[in-house]
Length: 252
Image (cartoon, rainbow, N blue to C red):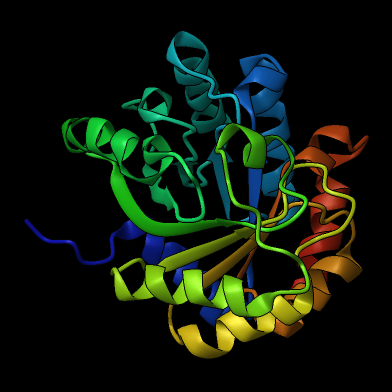
């Protein structure tokens, strides 16, 4: 068995190499019907997003999750990456999964227990596992509460750096810095800069509170490799134009 980079991770790295940064659109199956989710994914594709993430803090599962992924894949050729809140957030018709540990959680459930329960399903479903350290920064939002996270203070970048380095040394090739869905402001650029400076070729993903191309561009300038937007996409009246504003702002 090989744990080398798979097709989806290479796709993301190629997008970053070619254009300087990449964009991921996060769709929560609990927020709309599968057909509406497909429409959002199609519009995001037209706007230039690089992949679709599917999942949410409360953990959409079962038929709704499966049908949402199926509809997204019906209307777009973009990779679909699961972003599960638990082992129940896995399904066999996606392309990949962010196989992550919420490193600053107080709960073993989010550190390792769900990973143990989910690993056999990842193997059975033949999902590409993307090894990721997940770190919640203040204010944290719903995911911080549900994940029982010891939130990283915004003025303490050294704490975020320590967690990120721990993830890297554990073999995680991606680090996700998350401010929480709908946060008033994104993860501070100072945190992003310090984390990226020491992580080297590990990919730095930043999400939460990113509502404009300018905000996305500032994070990319600080070192972010991938920008995630979810809540702002759901609230947008013109998803394709909003995504294009972001992607055109972060790319060379």
